[in-house]
Image (cartoon, rainbow, N blue to C red):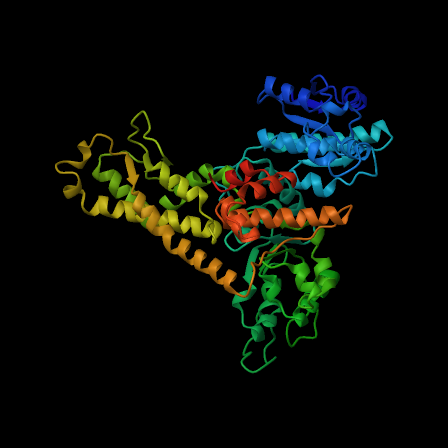
Length: 564
């Protein structure tokens, strides 16, 4: 039975859940942050979901923040206290996220004058909802959200034959469920994300299999096709349509009929061809180049880009009507490796198993195992390998364990990985190759006598210098790039995202928050350096920290993202 903690100053939500959802275990209501923190501490790891109200009409001394001095110094006491009551749930959520960053939580309110969207997403609430004055409708809506969250928690994070690693964080499991739903519909899907985040792999190995379509999966990288050949590649061409068209041939629309068409780098499509693609989506038909006959296009369209399509629309480089037809409201963004540090160790194991099973590395692994008398399974599929920073307590002759020094593990976890998973996989493949070649080719010199008699032959240490050498060129390149960016005229350039809010002050704080978080990362967590840049004072680190605290920026969370 799933357990739910409700944080609310009243009993109405507790009664709603008790009446309509008896299948859940309801804990006593927490009336304020102190009671919520105590309940979570007492039931550590045994609370499956939190329901959090926003408006709290409680005693002043129980309102967060407990130290109200800085706020009272800036405004009239009655107005400050009323504002804290109106947004107390978000204050509680902010504090809870410090100790429970992955706790599934739904923010809810029955007041229609409290904008939840921006703050709930900023504080990583799983869901947020506005409840109505109808118990049945409220219960049905809330139960749908609760069941969705609990289902994501219970589903397996990965299956052995699935090449895309989802991990175990709520955000990735939510993304998985969202894509599973979008895959079954007929509307297009936009996948956003930096280069190397696995957009093509995800479409081929997850979206297409979950679409229920029997046709083929066809992928096209539009950045690799010359502009004068793109129309023929997409729509096909009839014989004699232009010089060199010596035979009729189908385009990718025909080959993907009944299946899934994946168009990578959709921003490279010319405005003229954007109009043609729009007609395909609107009418379901198209004409091959040089033909007057219409052909039917029954496709599930998935497009990908690492560009901001909305910005391209504003600049006139992408058609607004096509953009809206591509279903931007449900666009998903794949996070980069640096944003998935909570899954880093699992990702490391996942990709190391994969690179060890590649043809060349697989031969090296099996040669090493044969020389050392290990009984590694040789059947097709992933090899029995593992990775970690400690020597396993028990020898296992049927598995090879790659041993990373803790400093190497910290270096890899904190690295930015500008090429994301593609770069990560390539680096791990190189690590396996560089480590094993010497051990295989020079076994008699490295281990005099019979290599099979080594004490722990299944443990393969990866030299710390090898890790450092492989990462150093990219580190130097990134530093030079950052230095060049700073030297382009006075000041430092930052990219921020503007999101509408209830007041200009909220927008301003959101911009400042993004700026400071980026600067913290660029300065590698050095508050003194931030003080030097912002105030021309290397001793102003304390001022910077206080301002970040006022904006709700948690240094602990930023350090955790950096792998510190």
